[in-house]
Length: 398
Image (cartoon, rainbow, N blue to C red; front, side):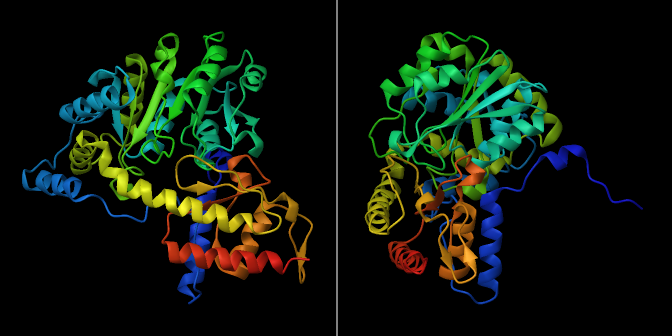
């Protein structure tokens, strides 16, 4: 019998972050002391009040099917959160709760993109965006940025990238993988461009909202002329250390929310009822509940920037959010260590894993092949040891 997978599957690639984590775990299983800076997961535990809400949901038998877009009171809580924290007016009927923000974004892309249509992805972009577009049959158009501009797109570059085929722009702020945060003024400048192109919808991925070192988060959906074309994506994984609860959500124009609910109803139905209740408690809590974690990440960011800045060949900027650094390592291309030649960032990332036993992710998967992504969601002692190992590995290159 012929073993054949679908053409759809062949269009997709394995997540680079998950692939690197798997390789790191294989080395760990073999007894190698690997420091993993590859996965985007807070190394904190879910706050007690949120865990308690989940436990109470079980005790109260909230363990049955819920409406596909989510429990009504949870959507009410998310609606209130959007208004309180972001100045966004999304009614509960405009909110869809999903199995993580990844499903939320996939629902939107499948709802809006037809084969042959284009989706603009400012690079670096989160690894799954491009494959979500491929899943829908669309094509992604990479919009390069530079470390000199803190990996943020410029208005004239956005204008030049838009064509008659453009259907969507997907961007994140704070950004995975760069950590960049768009200011109010920068958002307004991009909005001025988008106002001139009414066929373009915008997915604003705000999952790292609470890990922001600027003191101010800006949602593009607050701009009146664009609010009917903006889909705001958020969730509880990053800001509340709830990655395993798998709970994301969108606020969107109602017709888009209904479309997403229709797709979700045929794929997974509603997310876990217990996770929904816990998420409702999370978004209803004072956002300062995340302050301890945010402060710890800020200390770690500065530790990593200082350490990497002393390593020749690595160019580092100062990102203002999330828990990543995205150094440019192109100065190391062409260097060798024994029989190994560093041709690109993927080679360098693999070199660090195999020789320094530090797991990172090459930038090619993020659309920026001259960089690597390092997560500093690890203890300070681990980060200091990782910096030492990286420094020695780079020094060994000729």
